[in-house]
Amino acid sequence: KAGVTQTPRYLIKTRGQQVTLSCSPISGHRSVSWYQQTPGQGLQFLFEYFSETQRNKGNFPGRFSGRQFSNSRSEMNVSTLELGDSALYLCASSLGSGLGEQYFGPGTRLTVT
Amino acid sequence: QQQVKQSPQSLIVQKGGISIINCAYENTAFDYFPWYQQFPGKGPALLIAIRPDVSEKKEGRFTISFNKSAKQFSLHIMDSQPGDSATYFCAAGEYNNNDMRFGAGTRLTVKP
Image (cartoon, rainbow over all chains, first blue to last red; front, side):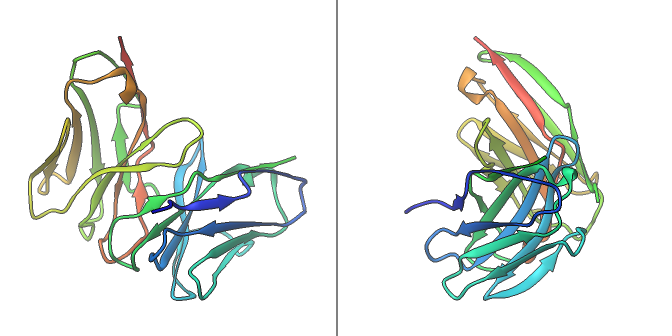
């Protein structure tokens, strides 16, 4: 069974721009969670989507948003990029919301210049 | 947002030795405690997880010990191998809620 895939793997953007990242969960998984990983703050939860609805949200500004499609694929959008948004963005899928085990993708490395 | 404290920050162990990483959590509602292993350039990979109904769980060379009253849990890697060199993250959360809180990570180096 294929794992979680994320595209693109690397991205360079300029301050003020916006970016959209994509995540395809493991086949049959219906929940997708997004995390930001930085050397200073570690892994921080952004939000979770299940059945096209945002179920949980972390403590991030409204510039960070997401959505989920009927095939469980998810996108994350960051508007008005700031230098501090440079990070590895990880998505994790699980069978369902609240079913424990999450499996991570390889991440998208975003660099904001 | 830091609700999980992980130590040590880095660890060097000789091949064949035991690696021990500790974590402590604050929220008594947490009932799911996974450990993840991350290699450079890769996403975290689920290694082993425990629920509070047991005090220990073993999978191969990896063992989680859990102390509910102390709100602490630890990962033991027996017979550590150079291939185990990676960053290890503990996490804690509610099993029915995918909002996991992660420790800061431990960079493990196993010397041959």
